[in-house]
Amino acid sequence: MKFTKSALMAALFAATLPLTASAGLFDDDEARKAIMDLKSKVAKLEADLKNLIDTKTDKSTTLDMIAQQDQLREEVARLRGQTEILLNEIQIAQKRQKDYYTDLDARLKKLEPRQVTIDGQTSSVNMDEQNAYDNAMGQFKSGDYKGAANALGDFVKRFGASAYAPNAQYWLGNAYYAQGDCKNAITAQQVVVKTWPDNPKAADALLNIASCQTELKATANAKKTLQELIKNYPGTPAAATAKDRLKAK
Image (cartoon, rainbow, N blue to C red):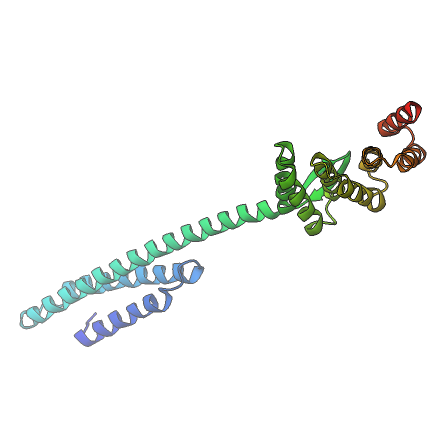
């Protein structure tokens, strides 16, 4: 086999083309194929170099052969260096992609609805409404009734269809009552009875309304509310309390 300098340089030039074409594709089969092609071409160049050394013995061309040999070695070293860079970039890109999808999956899981049991009923609740409800109730439990009223009022506006909405409306009435605001407490509890009449909180809401009416000296209205409670929600603890209050009047 006989090689000329121009033929060898042409082979080297052809060997470098796939590297440039695939350098930006770090995370797919084409990048891996480019690396395999580079490795194959490097091996061929090394074989060509060895064959050149073994076959070209004419002393008159020794210097030319040595120059070609050095040039080939330089090109082989360069290709190997580029191959290592490309492999490293692929590894970095793969790690970044893995980290990205791990983070994305974690964030999506936080947004996914979860099953909760509210007043004996299992419902699907999004994390944003869960957090909003927990925050509002946290304020109520800490004694910040004004802050709780604002947070609960905001909750029922934003999440009117939430499974927590009846509870939020009920505790909104209690937050007003805790501040001595019976008028707004009655209004809030009436929303519970009217909007969610079948909810377990409806009976308690009527009892709270009767309590507020009593405090406002609206005795006749309080008696009527207690009678309505006993009629519509018999057998409930609230109805039993209503009977006791009527007996005491």
